[in-house]
Length: 130
Image (tube, rainbow, N blue to C red):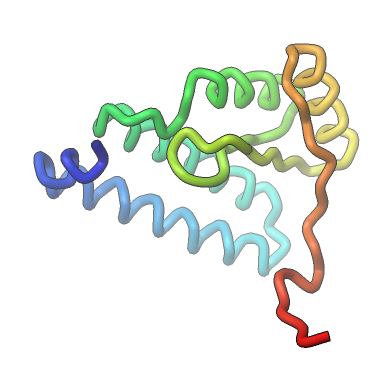
């Protein structure tokens, strides 16, 4: 469906993908410079572009469940986006404090979702021959 959108509206598709790329670079730059509020704005804007891509391509990139989770997280003060391929089975929330993340996780659990307690690894993915 996304490919069909690209073929149907080359300029529209390109505009969305360019915006998503620009937002990604802005977000990475914000994190590198400890500009947390800017990073959170980028996450929220990326969610909006994901939604737009899904709507314009008639593909379930942001499912109703992800949209509902976003609203719950937003009410708690966090920002949220799906993670993974279209209709991804996971999402990720970000906030300015652990208390906000905890409030979002509690609200999501009360709404029937299953938050996963995860943290960013300092080392990241690596390969070992051990």
